[in-house]
Amino acid sequence: MDEPVAVVGDVLRTLDLVGVLANGLLGGVVARRFGMDPVGIAVLAVISALGGGAIRDVLLDQRPAAVDDPLYLTVALGAAAVAFLVPMDGRRWRQVFPWVDAAALGTWAVAGTEKSLIAGVSPLPAILLGVLTAVGGGAVRDVILGQVPTIFRRSELYATCAFVAGVALVLLREGGAGVWAAPVAAAVGMWLCLLARHKGWVLPTEPRLPRTWAVGAGNRAGATSAKGVNRRNRSRGSTARPARRRWRRPD
Image (cartoon, rainbow, N blue to C red):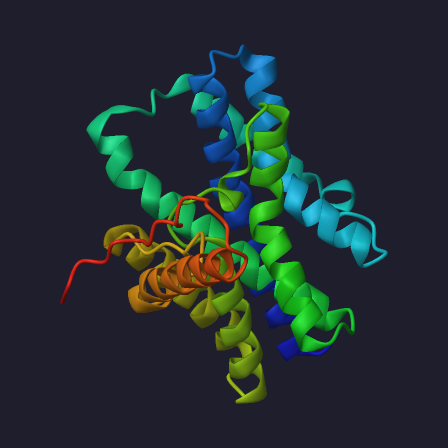
């Protein structure tokens, strides 16, 4: 194996394991909040840590990395043990949590995109597989807990940050960044995730049309329809009560 290829593989594996650790911690913390026992905490931590990567590998027609490399499962179970033994609540955890969450997102989005590109997938599907890697485990965890996955609810940008990290990786690879492409792209995704949480950036849940389109058009339509009804009644000699026109406040 060539030395540059080996270096890229080592960097990719390191990023992947960082994502496993961070997502395992997050899954264990969520399980603890639901009052689960150690078995429940371990199961949710493993699903959060390895679920997204396993789905990606199956779609790539590959054996999941956690099956071949025992270190993946060891790190996930270690994260579950930490979540069970160490209280993770209060002010200090609220300060640390955004960094852990952002690190998990950035590293896994990049690791998933990189693995897909190495497998011969074209850039756009590879980026989407990177997003799936980053959010898949958490989505499966939420479904098991009977909740709508966080990425489908109104919350700060998350999957979008993973997508941006994947795009950054592709652009850096094309620009000849070499072994630095993955760490820099992961930092971009992590930074954007933290910024979105700090600024409260969310995607809109419905289109926001100009107010004059909705209100003005409605008033004009209402007045026109009222005129039409009254005109028809007069032409037919009807004794029906004239249609009431909508009152519009003068500008």
